[in-house]
Length: 396
Image 1 (cartoon, rainbow, N blue to C red):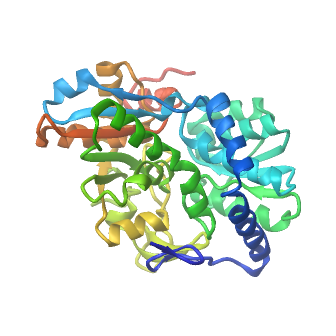
Image 2 (cartoon, helix red, strand yellow; image 1 turned 45 degrees about the vertical axis):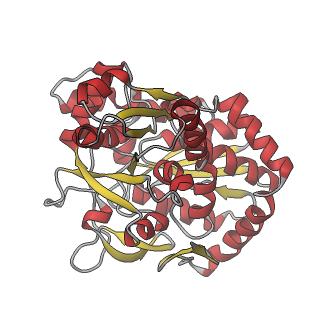
């Protein structure tokens, strides 16, 4: 599947300046050494179980199932993890790896703030310094998460360049890494960037599909028919898909942020509107303007507001193994409210994109079919933004 140097078909690779090559090679060697190290894996599993609260629940959404009148719906509750999302899985893995490499400082980029909070949390736990780069626009949208990061001891640096959102935070973090390779590890939050990041982050997140498989076998005695997850850079979704890729009868659906619609410029649906390009150290699909420049993207969800997609997703799309569907702001907000009222679960607005598509298609499946939706995070962080979207200002 993936060839050497992190290629997924034509996608992936290491398109980085010479100044970063040593850091990336050092990381790749360390990861290859530790990923099969029994002691490292024991420590990581202990952190997952005792600290992050894994395994996360696989919950049968009975009311939602009855209401939609089709497939039997299960929710993979990543929102129940410590810090409130799937981000902690990858961060604990990378922070532990960085510690083994002798690094004392973690830097990260963040959009919605969940990855930043998770990184600040792991840094506090492992006694490391932490700096988080966040687009200035996102610091306003996600003020509560900025406070949480600072409370955990991290320095949060608002990035004012470009569109002042996630892509600019990534660029800034990469620049910072170049200048402090010796003591610093760049804890990248998604399955993107230069190799080994897409593979490493996927491996840490694949605990999601590993658990889904075990849990659904216990509950139903068989694999699901369809699995859905939201996709920005694509870490919760690749984690959700990974252990099902070889199970050809399991349909995999990634739900992209269409913003105000894929027929507008205000969208972040990369697979649906993007073209092949090179950015942030990898070859993949990116939203671009007619001159091939990275286009400003838009979504109500700060976490999906990224102009590219991880190379493994691009490859799953090319080979037809997974399908990627656009979901608009309106649909996501409706799903955010629907799941809250139907199951008493407030999902992250990111995850609500997957719920929205499930609501659309559940009725097309027979009642004996099984659908799993990954709820990648909880929605407390989004309440003020959704209230504003609905015309109500709740001044936190």
